[in-house]
Image 1 (tube, rainbow, N blue to C red):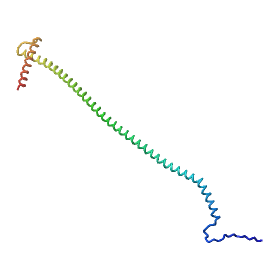
Image 2: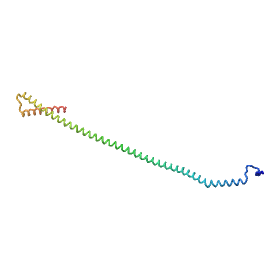
Image 3: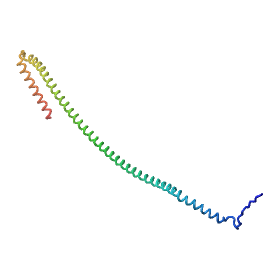
Length: 188
């Protein structure tokens, strides 16, 4: 019992590359099933991913534009603040210069007033010293004059009233002779 296997061989057509009609139909149905599956399932997902990427790119560009505008706005604000700070610094420098000039003027006035006060005090001291020297000289000259007059006159001038009159007369004559001498010097 031998069984025979019968092999069905398709009829030979002229071209081995051309498939049979059943293969074309089954291939077409399989293609349509795969195509519909891709169209309904994969294509929306791919479209969504591409749309998300587009939105992300466009959003990134938009965010970059916004960031650039914000940076420009901040830079302009910084420039304005810098200009204002420079203006304030220049104003403060001018105020400082004016304040320095005012302080120098005040110190100069105080120094001049102090110098005038010191000069006046020195002149007053000189005048007081002169008066004291003049009084001391007058007393000495008076004593010498009395002694000299006593020797010349030959009598004692011990009386104070007499001494005072002699000294006053001698000094008056001395001052008169100095006045004439200085008058003669100024006129020549």
